[in-house]
Length: 84
Image (cartoon, rainbow, N blue to C red; front, side):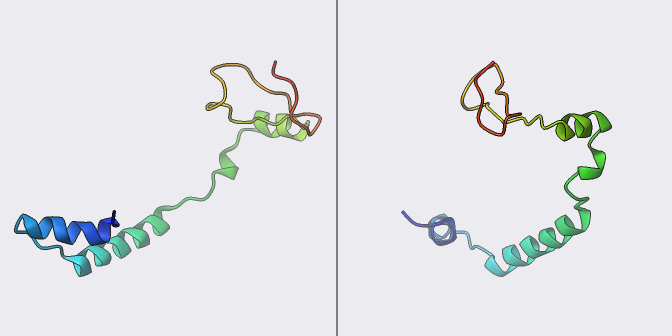
């Protein structure tokens, strides 16, 4: 099994197409430049005051979407607490 960069030219060649690798890489670099220019930061400034106060009290939240469908865990003691 090969990578896409090795499979694509082979597969497209079998269909009578060519891969413009230089054009692809040029457009990818252009997209990277545009992406960097559009990045507005991590969003720290947009966190509401209510969440800042909760965080200051030591309340932590953990994503449990892959472990459970409902419930939460209490992290205030710094250790993984019991499921509530």
